[in-house]
Image: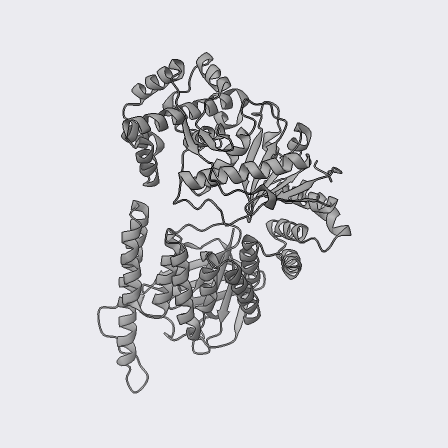
Length: 600
């Protein structure tokens, strides 16, 4: 079990990095400098890439094996596991790099560069095949930074000799290795996986450069368009048996090339690095936060509870302990701790995003909306390029018609800040539908078809276009029904509308008092294209709820991520917290659903 370390820890920081280490001040400064110089290298190599992630970068640099293993994930501590010298973790609102400083390697900073490369390519983690992800990191890990130049793509003698002495993994197996594979975890298999991934990546990058081809780019593009790794490799690289023989020849021939770039003009000033000694509670809070993010909950909780007994003004510990409470479904405690951290000025953007959602999860009443709105407006003020708070604030304001125009502008800003996320455009389309701006909603989708060529995105956009057509048809029928109402108040509906699909409830929005109920959803029925009926079973009562336009319902999730293809008509069996309004005009139901927070 991890406990308070009892060691002296230092913090070294620059404009872009924070190093937390129990080593010397000299090591701390050097680590910051190496990361700054590697950042400049990536900035030059990939000028279109945003080399600075939205989340802070925290480097935990352990001086020896003992302090390093005290922070490793539990599944990396067992006997026979692959020995690591570094580990990258993308947390909820920070990026972490864990390093072991006493690792004896040919390239002493290879672990630093390896993990930083993972950070730069973080946006591709969800779909990039593991061999290429690790191969690219291996390619850049052997970078050598001098005062006036940078050497890229150097070979590692140990890797070469290991590959020459051992049988290679068949490429059809290598291309399919994932995070659950023994080749990624077990020491014997893992060594050959990493070495061969490096060799193949090195071979492809060099031969692409020499032959002026782009096979790696073609492979990545095919993967991104939904091809499996084997098919994509066959299309980009050709016959895989031939490629295997070429790789074996490349490994044994020893004709390896490297690249050199001039770094004399790199604008790096070491005098701006700041060093300070951390208190024991500060150091332990960083360690516990990291342990919590990687899943060692009990260890993290023990450290954090110890800190908060003597230091209730520690914002890092408050936030980390609040996150643990949220993961344990103790949302009241999480809200309390998050509120304290917020009041102490803790303003990491991921935390603020999560805090706003946590507030709203307690119910969509006016008080909670106002609290969440204040947090989101602070987010926009501090991080104006972040699309998330614009989108989240728009989702709050859209509830009232008088605020929907502002919500529309916020959603447009979210799209401007992030043109690569389809969800924001779909949210704007839904907002425009609730404003009955059907042509504008269609225009948003038609523009999205041009921007998102992937087949899965095209299918999703086409589904939404079809929904708009159905929505327009439904709205037309409602209008015809209302315009043909006779003097006795009896609706005379014209057109081809069957009794089974006729509207069951009043077309106008419910205006009665609002309530929040929590239970399990059953009996969801969707018809008359956008009409929904459902029941919510709670320990005390079963509620009958409806919506005449489920595009207007604000859906959100708390402890899971709904896919872009989420279908609200298939919620049966999910736990939900629903805000609904009374509708005195309809005695057949308890009210009209206005927001639904789903949990698993």
